[in-house]
Image (spheres, rainbow, N blue to C red):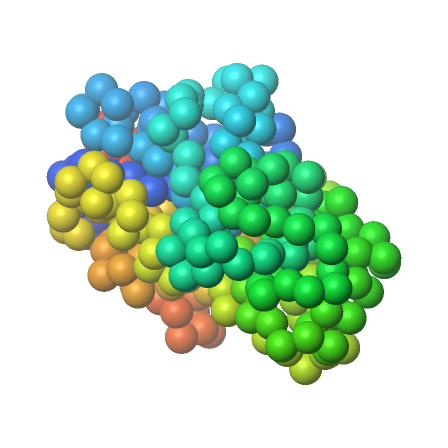
Length: 272
């Protein structure tokens, strides 16, 4: 089994925990990408675990489950670990009892509240500002966030540094781009919680009791998905179905351990 560049990829046959990015890796919008279903079924048949680790904080796990059912993606409640969940855990551990102002979707805010985070709509006195991938953003919300960051001594967190999210027509602005606007206005830069930080990967590894050698991360974005694997010291596999291209891999400093055209090529190599 070899990858796009001819590297030996036989070690993938021994992986027990597969951590997949979603947007641009498993699907784009509501369309499953080639080989997704076959690869997921192969992993399950061989007693492995598949978990979708996504930086997309605009949706709750319940939202993802509904989408999975709609598009035919094999999944259950334990199949997802999102940057929203990781952010909620970070807030409860590091800012217990603190007032949190959140710029994000209604789904994200509800998820934080359900996790016990004290989210407030009162912007006059808060301890932490959190920004997510806000697909419901308007100018009023953006300006309120900028106002708090300029007038109050608050911590500044964000769910993920992704600049663009793959969609059917190309890409749309993601959390990293929203935060870039905020930084241009306020001079403040957030602490990012999701990939490429190793927190999400290490949390899932601990849950399933697997070693680093038994774990692999699969994604389409070099500076989040692939770098998260590198930071976690697990194999990082890049697929060329989203943001990453061969040219970016050749020219950049972040190098995947293995590269494949898509999930179908991974599946074909495993069963060959």
